[in-house]
Length: 319
Image (cartoon, rainbow, N blue to C red):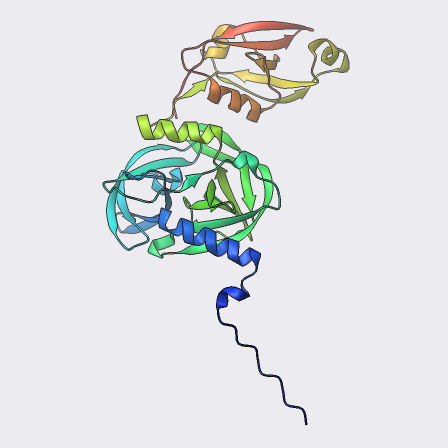
């Protein structure tokens, strides 16, 4: 009778790790020290989330909804040390917030660029939920360009280019890091979109601008035109004369708002802002982020079969 072959003994468990596992474990090892747990208390109720260290001198990035209604809380780091934090600033309309601890010598994460992501790319979600160190899940980018509605008071905005991933987000992972295979943080985990799907606010030029303003000034000031509408296709003859097939149709303007004061009215179709084509709400929002408050902008609108340039002076959005 032939003897059964003895199981092979490997000298090191690393030999069992394939390229996928090696990448995930490396990203986890490099990022866990840059993620903290945030604990907040409101009377008898306790809550919290995660945060990403972005500077050695104590600035952390998290989700605005994690710290909503709070000014202070307790941060716990990967080595077990704790430090009180203060909320420096929050921007509910992007769901981003910055907090700061009175601790130096921290290990900041490197922020990447979500514009470089591709569907199917490996991503790793790193968090520190509910005071537990080392929550790591991995998956792929399952969708790009998703939208996430946000609200602040009576103001509603859509966060565009949200990242959708099948990397599971555990309770308390909001505010944690979504990283690429180079251990660069390319998103801040914000919400569960359904069974097995999570959403992250992208780290891109717009969010970097918001983060910088929150760190330096405690708030992000947005330009406001005071008009609402929807994408609108132009009739073929109008499209030929206008030089584009779609625009943003104004359905209503806020009485006394910048657009109304400048003469924008319902039925106008906005073709461009300062020469940049605008065809939908997200494009309009992107253009508004680039506008400096106090600087007038030129809206090219299609009205009664002709294109007109109208100068509007944006006001500051009260969020």
